[in-house]
Each structure stands twice: as structure tokens, then as C-alpha cells.
Image 1 (spheres, rainbow, N blue to C red):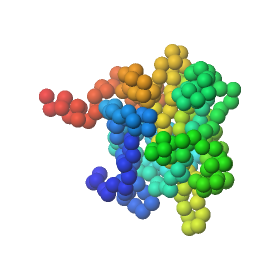
Image 2: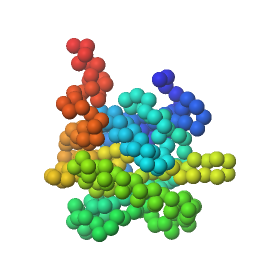
Image 3: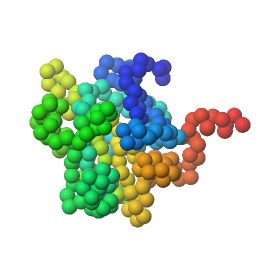
Image 4: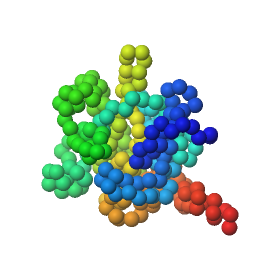
Amino acid sequence: MARRRQIYEGKAKILYEGPEPGTLIQYFKDDATAFNAQKKGTINGKGVLNNRISEHVFTLLGNIGVPTHFIRRLNMREQLIRQVEIVPIEVVVRNVAAGSISKRLGIEEGQQLPRTIIEYYYKDDALGDPMVSDEHILCFGWAAQDELHEMADMAIRVNDFLSGLFAGIGIRLVDFKLEFGRIWDNDFSRIILADEISPDGCRLWDMATNEKLDKDRFRRDLGGEVEAYQEVARRLGLLPEGADSAVLDLETHRKKREK
């Protein structure tokens, strides 16, 4: 596909103008960041894996009636998506204590929470994506009350579905983040799921061993990031057993073929 005008570049993706009005092309990069981009690196093939995993999850969510921005995958690294007005709030759903909630509240990592918790974070890299309450969101107009309810309801529905999906392949869904966007029809808007769902934004632990199969391997210098992402894709049926991992890195794959 011919390269189009770039609209936006984030830490893990680039957005280009789409072939039709109201559409964008979402390109998945191999860049990896942590701690609000204080730590940077590359995970070869991550963009390809995240593209496939996110396509799979969004397709399944669409099949159960969850509205999303996903239209279709175009190639190994790109998807066609609906253009939305992003709500500047990250919605984090927690089932198990891990990461910042363990640090903030002194809860042992890995402890099952008595109930699922939804947290909100204001999307602003310069401020470090601070945690905010629904009062902040309503006060500053980042989302309306009905939108906030819709986002929370959708987050719980996604959590219920994904928890079952991952449990079926031996993975514990510890926590994950969601982003939402508005689609406008004249003066009326509706909320739909946007961004991506992949090991970049989910904590995924092997149920038997508690091995981390997500970006925490990069955050905590555990190594084996590519293998962890591949394992998630394999269990979801997206990567054949024994597949040559080098094919996920096109440059390496081409060099091998040229030899």
C-alpha cells in the first residue's frame, strides 16, 4: 500500500490518513517504551505480533457486540481503523495486584483482588499520565457522565470476555488498559473501543508458573520479550507451532533468503 500522509506518531504506533474519509491506517512499530518513555528499546517483530493479536481480540469483541474502531488488517504491520476523537483517559482494569497498585498500596504482587477495580489515568506524557477520579474527569470535561458510564460498562464487559478467553489458553489476565474514542454523527457522538489490545497493554501471566508473557519482561529487564509475545500468539492460534520467529522481523528474513 502506498505510504500516506502521517497524522500522528506515538510510542508504539503511527497513524496515517486512510483511503476514505473517516478512516486511518494504524502502523505497529517495534519500538518499546516503559515508565512514560523514560526507558526505550526495540523488540524485534513486536509490531507484527501486536497487529495480529489486536486484530484477533478486536474481531472477537466485535462479534459479541462491543463497538470498536477496527475495520480490517491490511498487512503484517498495518490495520484500517475508524478515525475517532480520542477520549484523553486511559481506563485500567485490575483483577490481580501488580505494578503501580502494589507499589501505591503495599499489596503483594500476585494477590487476587477481592473485586475487579477500574482506575482512570489522564493521558499526558509530560505529567506522567496521573491517576484521576471520575470527579476530575467530569470537572474538567474530559468525558461526560454518560460517556464515563459507557466506558466503565464496556471495560467490565471486555474484562469478562478476555478473562475467559485467556483462561482457556492457560493465561491469567492480571490487568490491562483500554482507550476509547468518540464517533460523531452530526451533533451526536457515541463511544467505541480504540487503540489496541496486546501484550503491550496487558499483564498476562502463565497460570501454571506465573511466568510473565507481556511488556513487564522489558520493563524489568527479564529478557525473552519476543518469545513471550510469540507464546501469547501461539496459544491464541495465530502463530503455528515451531514457526520461524525470524519471519516476524522482515529485514532479517530478507537477509536469510538472500544468502
